[in-house]
Image (spheres, rainbow, N blue to C red):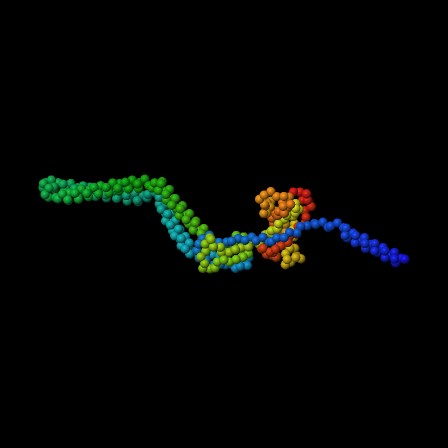
Length: 338
């Protein structure tokens, strides 16, 4: 009798347990599971100038730091232009210095001597013409030909013109250079200095430098190739920070917010999640239809979300499929999404 009673109690317990298992409330979903890919962020580098490639210093897969020189162009022609520009600047600086210092006393004395010489030549030409005219008058025009008289008169005019020219030159020497001449020389010097600065900039651009820490993804030129701004030399993949791009539906949008913690796992190591945080949630739905939609269609829209991941061991590869797990935000329930 006791065995029968014990058996009945056992059956009742089993039935009660089965009933509880079937009728128990469904467990609450405490998190979201989203699927996406590691975002591909890259930089395409090209030379600013056009010339032959002299050196390509890194290979595909190499890690580079910001400021590292990746490639160098042949700069021999620019070096020669730099030497020429410096020589031109030196000449113009001396010319400007001469204008600013004005006329030296020795130059004024030289101008005075030239005036005296021109005056003496004019007086001599005048005396010769007077002598020939006197001979012509005394001989009735037979002692001197008309051509000799014309030549003497012409020599006198030339001598007087030179005397006048030398006299004006002496006046200019005493006054000194004009302000306009000094300003023109200064402007020409500034133009030459600007040309030298441009050459220096072009020399700097012969070195192709990494703009940020990255990994060389592609090497697109080789030494001897003709580089130009339209021909990329390297493609760099930015690996720090890394972002995982996923999409959330509108019903899920109210349970996520920027700054929330997240875990990222991959198919290669599903047992080793990588910590991250939500960094961006788009405020615009993807593939928004043109016409007004029903409530059911509106709930099917998705919003882009990016999760920033700390991956010091470099386990995530760009473009790799990834799963993002996020604990449901209880504070955001009932609040409108972004």
